[in-house]
Image 1 (cartoon, helix red, strand yellow):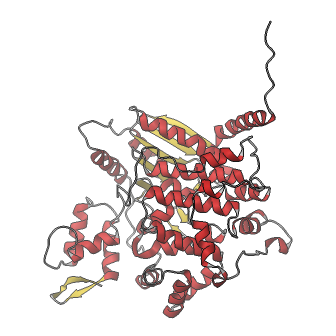
Image 2 (cartoon, one colour; image 1 turned 45 degrees about the vertical axis):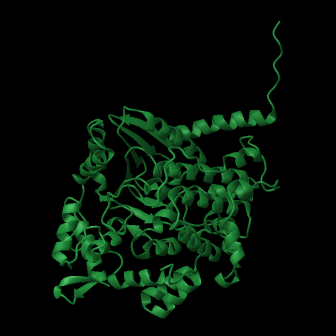
Image 3 (cartoon, one colour; image 1 turned 120 degrees about the horizontal axis):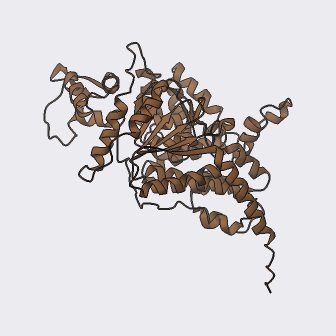
Length: 504
């Protein structure tokens, strides 16, 4: 006689149903396929412009771990099936809806899953090539920027617009933005300004510019790069991938001009210098003192953003500038979860509700934002500190009526146990290990000033600088433009002769 089985609990039944629904959704939002030696991950959530969901992150991470251990693949390609967007960000609208419905645990789970994916991509043991078409914002930047190869094109539209939605530049970008040339990252983080096409290459987001109609041919070339040999170092193999992409790049047009003029870049570098101006208030004061139309327009832009978001974003970037990648992403998770759980007042739910969820409402009152703090001066320092400190687990450790059982039957304890960044390969660093993009301003400065470990005791000419970087970067397209752009802005004739350069 068979023993009668015990019926499953309601929580277990709910979890099984949720998992089944998740599998059905995941089967279409992300596609995985083998292309010879490449493993291709294609984002396919067109209705949401490939906005990342928890399910998508949960699907991508185990595949990447599988690929990392396999000897049958050489590299990973991230791409989009949607011509309008590579990835428009994380699905923050869903997070706000969950928060407003009392399902805050689901938002915590999303950011935990997303940031774990970001850290895995940032420390992956094989080359990752992102083919970035269309919109790449927020979570889309986090998917691509930590990889060594970011191929941009004529439709690329980059931005980190989080301060407009009551959030902060996350997905590991606090690490990347704080290291961009001339404090440009601080500017992009606070203003949410966009970079298109070639501008995204020159600014440092893209590593290569390839017209979108060549993406398929480029993918085929990448898929057929010879199998990695033990007698080749990883650096040599990455160089092979770099050269394969270079065969498809488009030269910068003769009449191209970078989005920002030298004068505007000087304004950005001076005003958004965290050493000279350690607070958002002092940044604004510096811009007002500058007085140029460009500077005053930035002030106007900043005044339209969430005050609490500006404060935490600027402070976070300054901390991330001194942090390693693991700590930077872990700190972002603390901040995100603190905002979701309402440790201190913030504008995340309010701004997304009024700017995005209610955008089609015909009632004007549905779009009036009621900020947690009306001005920067209204925000106590301890509010910013409380949002940035602690751990995700300790933040959620106390039972809270706002943390209910999730739709999948998960308990508050389940959420707490997973609110952390996994170590994966145990890799950590304070600078990205590979640079296959254009030379950085710091690199150019070190060569001009003789601080490049060459023991050179003489000044250099412009032609010598250009020749040096052309050789070092193997005549990479865009290098001469970038070096010229930096030299025009940051050098003058030295006392040793008009042809010799002096850094200013």
